[in-house]
Image (cartoon, rainbow, N blue to C red; front, side, top):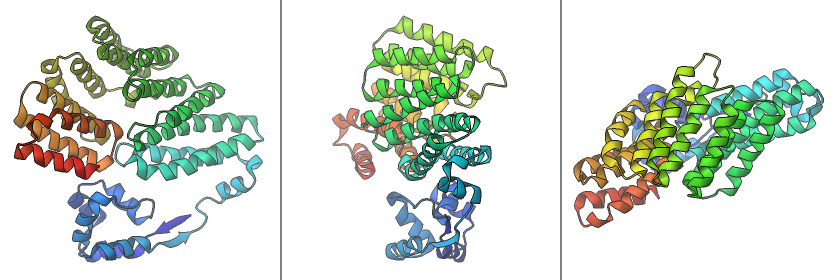
Length: 385
């Protein structure tokens, strides 16, 4: 069902803002304002006071604008509507429609909060599973397995993020579903990526680096014949798992193997966007931080945090690690400034990785809690909570 917040859009225009202008004023993406106006999402609590001020309305008036939703089109895809009522009729056009919806959600992952995306992603995932379970055509069923593998992987990411990386059971269930679906679809790249995501839960959630290394190695093995990018990315997390246990030699050996995968890159590698020099540097910096070498981590993380400006969730993680590197070297002025940048990035997306690192840095600053600058940081962390 397509809908619009028409009164909200009119108020934005009467306040003298284009979508781009309002987005710039608020420090969000233009697409975020577009999703507010299309009733796909609502502004988060932290940004509503500034939004109300920009539109020159009270908070109650802002809520009234958001509540006023007009349905503009009840059937954006007649073929999709028919398929949901008659699931055995689903065809490759329906699969293509679902795949495009999933692509749009995936592109929003680095710019929006996971809680804001979870409802739409959950609805889409339910539709994909329902149609796959009832598909009459084997070719269509296999294509739906491909979409389900990607959809389950995204759901695992969103659920884990939304729980601030505290709930490990539900995300692992989605990742295991993704692995199973990818095997049905004979898609080793997606199987590898879902397995790699399981290693993230072991490394950063369960704090079990040995299990995390095992899963990351499995992901690298699955990807070896099809995707140098996923192989490299998996090896980076093998390195990080070794770093968590203080194994310097094993960590640097894995980093060298990961770096070598850049030379194997080819244009058919669909995972290439996941494995970039910036991602390599971000993980290398994290490794040296775990190894107790903040002076080696700092320049890597400083460079990487600037380069990741377009990927807010990844940038928040890099900034959080940079803050920790600065604290551990006693560079408190720089640490405080970087901490504020970390919180700025986390406020935009609420990414679980950046959020947890922000609070980790906050705990390390407790010994200076009587200082005004530390109190200001603590106030911002409380606001995040």
